[in-house]
Figure (cartoon, rainbow, N blue to C red):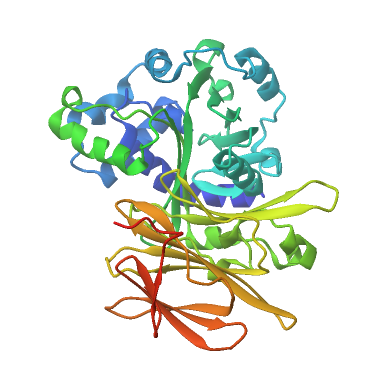
Length: 443
């Protein structure tokens, strides 16, 4: 375990920390809000790495490692209060209660990363407590209250804890840096916000970069944050609005490490698969037919999520969602019945955008059937479009290079093949046009 930590430290520290430093050095020169040690020599090392990534950064901000860190943290807290402090009473735990909870958590890094109830990020590697992370984030997307504790580490492997609380309507965060040498006045951050966003972006080597941040702007995306920091040094901070966000997590995850998140084969029992509650791209039986895809071309991965709900008395139901990268949800199937799923990006109306086709099906000889939910991309939104029939034994997407994609369906009773194209707000078969009156709203 100790060797694993040293390896992560040497291979990922400069990647993750320098990347963050190059972006956020503009805000008060504070690397500390991102889980990086505040010691002068470590800040200098990170700044050197940041300079290598961005040689054109201004001298004004390059010299910011000489600032009084504690004084600037106090200034930052006052700024955060203006952005995120709630206007009305809320039902969250008190800061004092959360501090008492965090005080009971361990300080030893090797012990921390063995705890499944702590989402641990070691120098950009987020491989520990991932199920805790996925459960919390997905529950938040579905409006289910809960809490999560996240641990990040300084270069001395001192933990920086973040306690996140969701009450079903908003978020409460307490960050604890007291194990990194800060006193109680500067070692704790308490903020509130309406939206907690976690976004996944592709990197150039097939890995994933994750960002976690708090905001009161539902339309905020991290690409807007990056755009701000790419222009503020040119136009000046007084001439551009500071994004409404507070970032607390960056994960730089290699392709191999992302693959390691996939559930192992010993979790593939029939019972576990039937009761699976999670991202389909993390389940070996579902992942290849339901990968992460940027459907709406905003640069953020969109992911398919299966919600399994049981009352404990033998009754259950399953819903399937597309968690869009911008924070919106699309319910692909309510009370899903299929044993297998396939989600396909297709251009069904020949507009150059990716429409979403979600297919659920059974291939059991006694119950062969298939059903598709189609969502067409129109004017920046996904709109459901009902097919002319729900009685098919199979449905496939036929990709037409340089042309309009179509659905190839086989009727259950007649076994006749039917090809469906979407033309002028109508599903057209090889024989006739069928109105889309119950689905897509006509232009």
